[in-house]
Image (cartoon, rainbow over all chains, first blue to last red; front, top):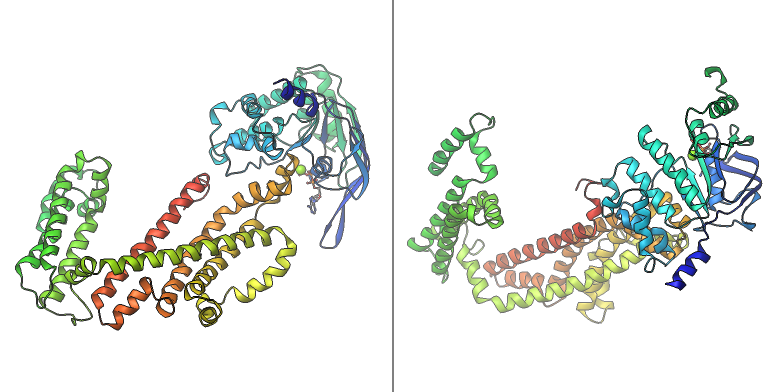
Length: 265
Length: 343
Ligand SMILES: Nc1ncnc2c1ncn2[C@@H]1O[C@H](COP(=O)(O)OP(=O)(O)OP(=O)(O)O)[C@@H](O)[C@H]1O
Ligand SMILES: [Mg+2]
């Protein structure tokens, strides 16, 4: 028991990792034409920070997240997690993708257990799966298959599947984009309280300036493709935040202006 | 037909308000009381025709067949009356009642047309009692043939399915393997397995191993192609998810690619099963001196047409049994697919 606890403490410290993104460039070849996607992106993210990335559709936000996750290598530049160069995926950095992408042949429980199973530690850590499912409020659906879930429930399973690994960095790619506004608001509050309890570093992509301001310490505004860092805004407001906060409303106007929407506001 | 109209009237009275389609059709679909009673009639007729009508030829099992027919008629009657007390067995019986009517009628017509009037040329179209006679008197030989066929088929099919599955996964997964295997598959795969017959029978040490090879070949090709296409069509997003959660390549193959490809694999297994039956029968007819295919050949050679029909019936029962078994296996392994796709 002590050994297990110790193992857990060593493998998964409840503290987030620092992320360094240094002069990263990335491009895709589409039919021989080079499409630059990221241009000299540099960001230093401190342990436990909650950073929101905002930018126009197709500017390269998901691409940046894939680089941080280690799913792709940048054309040039370096990414580091706690001063260690990122060369491939690692369970300390888990991603909740734009789509839930649950495995349809696995039940909710088995989907959430995926990470522990892949790392070969499921046998001794089964209670962590139950805990993660409880955390997202789906205890009654352990045995359900993905096609039996609603969109919001599926996204919550995807969140549980990520959280069960006790990641140092949680990468969220518009995880709430497809949810109805009520579920969205609930999930936003859940994400904040999870982040506060566990202390992981969070990188969140969103389209919604209000959501970014409600959740993040820091909002990075990206330019049109190829994405460059256009603005780096600190949000020094205590949690829980209030949607009507005039300070946030002011920041929101500023951000929408950066995104080219000043006329409407 | 007269039994219909009675129940028909009561059914029509009961459902008159709601029912738009003809009452007899509804009744036939649901297999009600009337159909159950109707089922007994042709079987009684069948039995009576066996018992009280002199055969044209000399068949020893006519009497036994009559008793069996009366037995089925009695079961149909009892089942109809007692269906409500028989639970799920009663429901199943009721659902099949229309088929009992059809089968009984068919057998009666067959009996009368062959044994009583001789409308169909006799050695080629034996009456039902002649086939029954095969089952009672030639059982040991028929049984040995079934065992031989099942052994050969099972061995070849399992080998072919296993090799096909492994090959399919390898070429779906590894480009290098695909580079070498894909052209071979393209070149050799579409060749019907029976085209290899001459080759197989002089290269292999025994006709049994040659036939196993041919059956494995017929099974292996569709299983390979469909497993491969199944593995190749797994969305990259699944791999991304697994990799970010710490999955190694072996996990990606065993726990992502294979389960995702399994529905395709089963299509291949079904196709392979059908193809291998054809090869089995041909191989048994030509090379192997055992099995149902050989029995068929033997029966035809001796003009024992009743034996031939008897073997055909057994063969079709075995083949459909095998297909049913595969369906059951799939339903069990792919429960998750229910509700994702229609099947
Ligand atoms: N695998 C790929 N191959 C080629 N081009 C790609 C690939 N992935 C992304 N791109 C291109 O890179 C650009 C940025 O894509 P990305 O998915 O990062 O956008 P995004 O900012 O996440 O957009 P959205 O907000 O709509 O999700 C797009 O123009 C897209 O066409
Ligand atoms: Mg995106």
